[in-house]
Image (cartoon, rainbow, N blue to C red; front, side):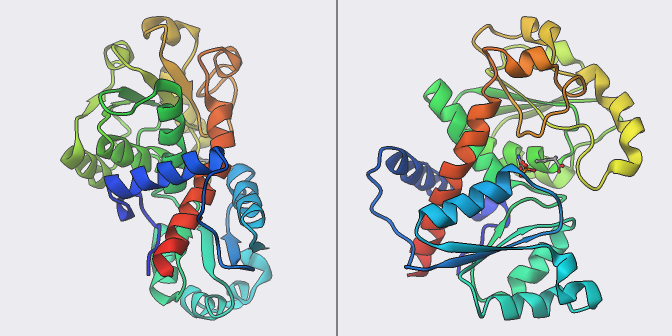
Length: 301
Ligand code: CP
Ligand code: NVA
């Protein structure tokens, strides 16, 4: 049975196959289908706008159905284990899609589930986001191989952990640009280095040089609210603004998984500017999630 817990669960050729399914869906030529009435349960501990709604719409448009669950309303809140919960839910539904605080919880769920489990964000990874983002870059630049992607600010966050591995896997060069005091996660950096070039910079200008993609994410990820002030101060010098854009190639694109905090990790003029493809990224989440679900379903049959 195939799970999608980490970007590493798919090889380069599997990612290419998923991109091909997304292309076919876009052109209305996709012949893959879900089994009629397939149901996904969305088990979300954290808030979500894009990922929740796009997975829900994806299931509905593919002829399936979905059930959204806030764990607080279940027996999890009264001490039932994740493992027992997963065992039971997987006896009713065809997919379990999770957004969780701890990646360990996701692993526990996957261990007990008898149906595919899909990561919709944990503290460590955001793999479906990474695939959608790479698909968006491929659409905008016509290729991935040989492009340089600069990741700004909190280089130790979930979005970047997934993106640096998937990007390197697809032949991109990765620059992690952030303060020395915030060390990127060694596990993800060394994995990414197995696939390609990954460089760390605390000097923004040096890191930006030659970049085709400038990508930032919030300075305060969900679950880090207690350190919000400290993090904003630490990462502020790495804000993507007009000055940073001027240092980059005029054809460089600006990306953000959203939600954006205008005036923090990115300025509003840059987010709304002509080099920004952040809203294309958001739009493509629906397409790539359909492709992921169809690909995984295809492995089951
Ligand atoms: N990019 C993203 O995952 O957004 P949501 O938190 O709104 O799902
Ligand atoms: N790093 C962010 C991503 C949100 C989509 C977070 O975890 O809050």
